[in-house]
Image 1 (cartoon, one colour):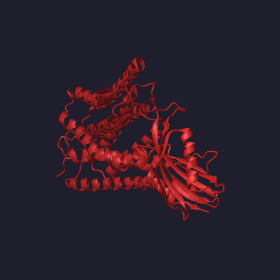
Image 2 (image 1 turned 90 degrees about the horizontal axis):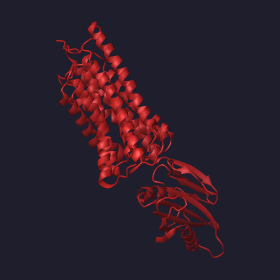
Image 3 (image 1 turned 180 degrees about the vertical axis):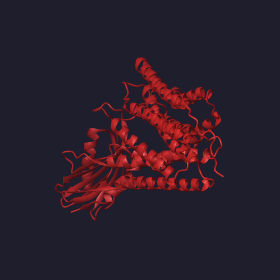
Image 4 (image 1 turned 60 degrees about the horizontal axis):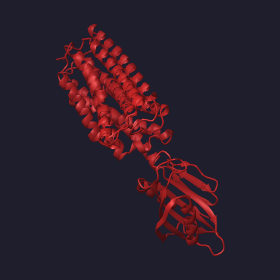
Length: 476
């Protein structure tokens, strides 16, 4: 027996009106918040900063749900199902998607290091976020009898995308203790618009997979397209915007290029999906669209496995790239010294240095190699005293906290751990404690000084990389 959805040929124009009105309302709200921020420049701090940030994080989803509820009075749809998809999307993102990306893979630490990291990181992020939306609709709503119209897939996909966006924004606000009004709302609006757009697109493919007789690769193709478009949006956004999100009060008009990209994307995707759905409805009305077979559950399982395979492939590519970016090295050879430093580090060698590489986009740690001629009677300890005098002049409270003999490349070396206070006077920055490690290697009538410096917050992350760097050195 062929199951024919009774409402599959309905045309619900109110859905598209509410989608577009929600986008316009959100953009207008962002403009209002930015205007208030620039005009009054409120100074927020403590609990007030956090509360304002939390309110800003939920506004995009609230606006969309309000517009959906208003149109729902004319074209009924169980509002509870929509709200449940929103909450499940937020829960899955908070429990699995966000921790995987930010705590396990730590994509935020390496996403913008270079072109390769941006490509692989965006692909991995797009795949994981798209799967969170897919899992929300496919496993918690797909087989419900209420899922009986093509537009239902768009509605539920958008709700799941907004749940993901809200969880992402809440995590951002809580992790940073709040955000400035204008800049914070622009950021959360970008995230919400992009995820809502891709949720609606993936929802379209889910709707057709539910209501029409499609091959098993159809849904996998839709998932792959959504993940790739999400990755492309992240790449483009990274090219259009630079810098970081500000906290507290905004000092200048924030960049809106990413917001315009996300808003334009949401409008374009909504219009395209509306045209596609209306076309599919017209095909059904003419009897051209075939409903699912009686054994549709078999096709459902095959389609689901195909999606899982595409997700696994995209995630694997992203993970291989992640490993290459975070564990790859760049070889060098200079003045009788060979070695390899982390590929994520950028060379910025000064006049009196053989090599300096810095993690400019990560924690800011630096590895430096200097060569100092040894005068008669000088050894590693005397060079260490010389370095202490130089650093004591350039910074405050320089102290050596550990000192021990530790050979490097079969040459005698003195390993020292030190700390000082960088006053930041030259660049007007806030003073901070800087920690570091010296290896003073005496070989061939010279002292090769290999130094790492990093902030106290980053020292534990940078030290293992530095030790690998030192162990890679070959001196002649």
